[in-house]
Length: 116
Image (cartoon, rainbow, N blue to C red):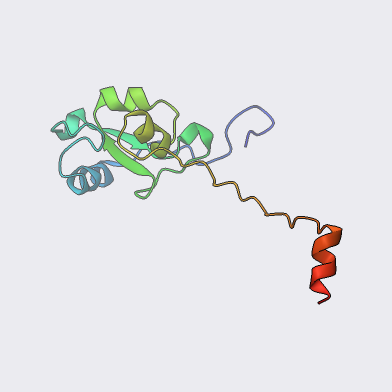
């Protein structure tokens, strides 16, 4: 949310601290979590699963270790959307449309048979 002067009122923290980045790199097995490229600390970029610009927070749960190329490719896409574009996650299934079977109106003959 923007304040009166157009500044973002959220916490200005957009990246993790040094120790947190080291833990994230370790959690990722020292590989880019998208392409699998080996990463060293200096080359790692902290990506957001839900973009910071779209309200995502800077937490371990919302962070991924990426190489700079993958971070740039992701842009502001959510992690799920980015993975689908990369062909790494199943495409969203269209919701199955439920159709209700309508009861056929009874004709005169059927209604007479019911009475028997």
